[in-house]
Image (cartoon, rainbow, N blue to C red; front, side, top):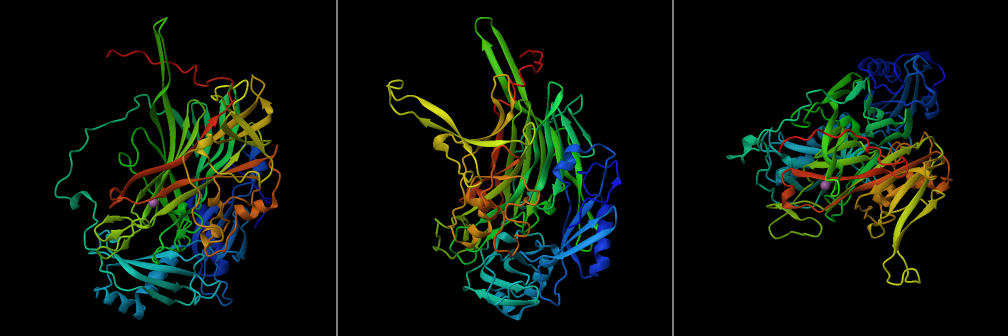
Length: 640
Ligand code: CO
């Protein structure tokens, strides 16, 4: 890694997104050392250290450093995990490391190579012919990460994946309606061959169409009436570069190749000064473990962020379809395998939403009816990872509430099953002869709190029924009790709806007008942890999903819950770091929150599932002296 010591003065903010010129200049410098074989998977800005960002003022000197991950297999030394290259654009310095613990994420080149290798394998061709397909043009191959379940015939350290297949009637068909059951190609990308072909026998390919565009339906339902959302006075937020201000909120926003949508330096203006709330808030990794025992699915647990670079899969959004109202978009730039820049226009959507009633009271004595409407600022992105889509929506509210909402949609994983073979507890039917395995989507958000500074602590708050006593003779009393979490091992906690459990971050050095420490509460939704058992590959490689809460002391090398390179790795990240059992009391802490859904597929999820939601909410708890939106101007009453 390069140091940020050599620097030039710059007017570009250190958290400004990468430009196409920066990416291409950096990639060229790397290719001049690695040669044309270098294929890039992703690029990111190496975010400057927290201490630097705290004191940064416009014009200060700093070095602009980019990190590229990529592959250049096959290499002579058989270390095909790929490379990690940092480039100091200010000095032109390049540092290249081979990745040893895990591998570079799956890249476009891996996909294309796996498809080519598999389609030209005679054994695979024969197996597909046996299933009644003679022409492979419209056979769709989906290469999946093989992490944790790499076939024993593939040597350790080789780049590998597992390709499963679907049959499309033509170029525009939805292949997921026609799974080619029982066939898995274990692809050794380093050797350039199918190392092993798993064939569990022929199951007829389901025939019903899974097409879903308007042209695919003879008759469409009646369309809802036109709705238009206008702001005649223009939007209430301002955007300068990637810095956004709205009401009392201010922050910066970027897209990271692994973490996707990132909020930086989120603060709230209170009585004339900016109070920091979060230094950085984003997804850190996620996993989709499958529960089905069917060999087509039993190994699946893709880490869509760390292994598949979720941030690179960010969509270009469309006004009127993805977003309604007065929208401001920000573009995002990724790197193509060849080192040229790929511009994703309109990647980040920023807009305001009316959110119903914020507060209200009708005073029957004075007949006064005071109502204020809630408004939220929405900052969002959508990502397509294979068959699924994930939307990430940060909401900032007028009363200091912060919310993350994940929207899950797209096409569920499928199996073809013969008539009468349904195993509904593992894989319910979603269409004739199409079953969809039970699975989870577990998202680990990294919340680098900075409540009025970095000296923060975390309490768990449980509400419990009081024992019957002199003061509680009827057994009706209950109380909310806060317990300080002192070390990392104290802080491995799970949600408990029976105790209305929440976790509260406080700063003991800053008191509100009532004399209590200022705080923010993480209110988990009704969520689960990972069902895969302790000791399993899934639990080992995505250990962050075994708890809803983790707390660590801030360390700038700890950004990814499953480690920097989970792809084909053997486990890293939170469970390993927290073995140190470090102190987390009155220090700079990071909260890690795993939330998600357990998805038991239903016919209504087919052929494209309606959005399902998960996420969490952060509420100010004594951070303010009173309802911070009490002085919001009311609206003039309109005639009914
Ligand atoms: Co799902």
